[in-house]
Length: 127
Length: 187
Ligand SMILES: [Zn+2]
Image 1 (cartoon, rainbow over the protein chains, first blue to last red):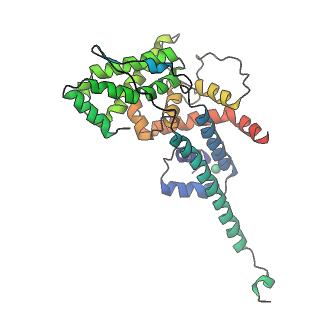
Image 2 (cartoon, each protein chain N blue to C red):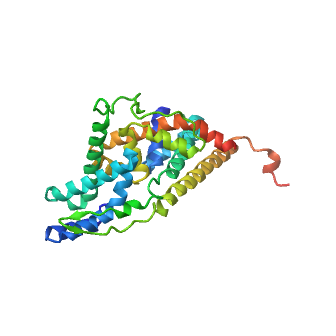
Image 3 (tube, protein in one colour):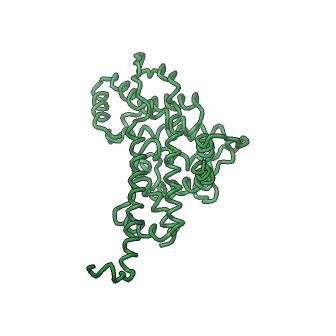
């Protein structure tokens, strides 16, 4: 698999549409590819920034005056609240989750590399 | 999305309670309006589209075989209206092919001089300049929080086409915005 394909997986990951087996494969690749790590980072930032501009109607309530006519009856629309807190939480949670996951991945990598190095004798032998 | 409540309201409408349609309207109008507004960037046009979409939905309710899919059906009606509005207002009356990979940016949306101070303004600016076909999948995913399958149900595309458009749209936006992300980090 090449980096473009992994970057497609990153786009799916951001959308929470990536299957578990594929994410294992992706994170393995991320552990050794700086370009794709940067892509993931950019995608996360983009998602967060897009979320910030995603409320075109929040400050304009005049639309609440609209009515829908069924025959000649009229109904008063019920106003929905601003964009749900939950949807913002989910992006935020995803960001944190991924940051933790990548952090964990790196710490695992580093400790894996350490165990491959010869262990200094003075640390092995009891003093 | 396809809450049992929609089906319940639809069955009430079918058994003669027309007022139940206004409940459907109240339930979905604001969200549908936000979707249309994001696509059209024109408040009045978006409101018109929503009214027309509900009107058309009301008139053709009998053709909806699966009441649990009302939400997607309604969205796809609104989407078609959005596309007709765009077609009407386009100089050449066409919407470009979505298969052209290189062509993600909309050349017909007027490009003012980009002098944006805020990152949010830049993001909004570039989002607005994505071609409709790319913008709509991003909007449905990002703001309507729909799954690929749900988006495909609305746009009439395959899931893999939805996925590929999302990827291309994000990649194109990232290319424009990444330098500013880094700038913001430094400041
Ligand atoms: Zn890579």
